[in-house]
Image 1: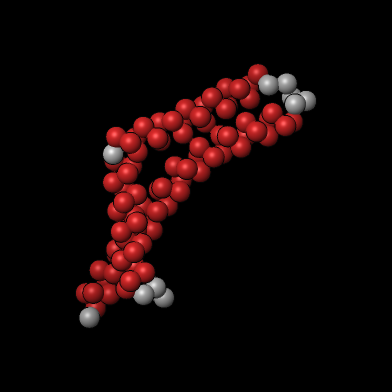
Image 2: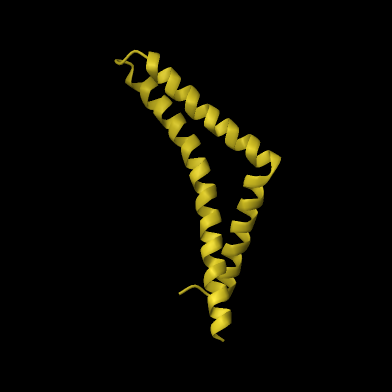
Length: 93
């Protein structure tokens, strides 16, 4: 069970993730990540199938872009969950 301090910290991080995702900087960075994914997939279409190192590098590049967005969304969701738990505990007391 998470402590109240842990719930508050998680909620604050989630709120910061939400603010980042909604900011011009966040929108720009997510756009760059999505462009990286698209560029990697386009490059994969034309890479020689025997060049396994190039294929692996392009797959990793695409995966990193996808993970970046996922990490932010997970922080946001964790923060929302923490806020709900905190609110529920507060209502119980």
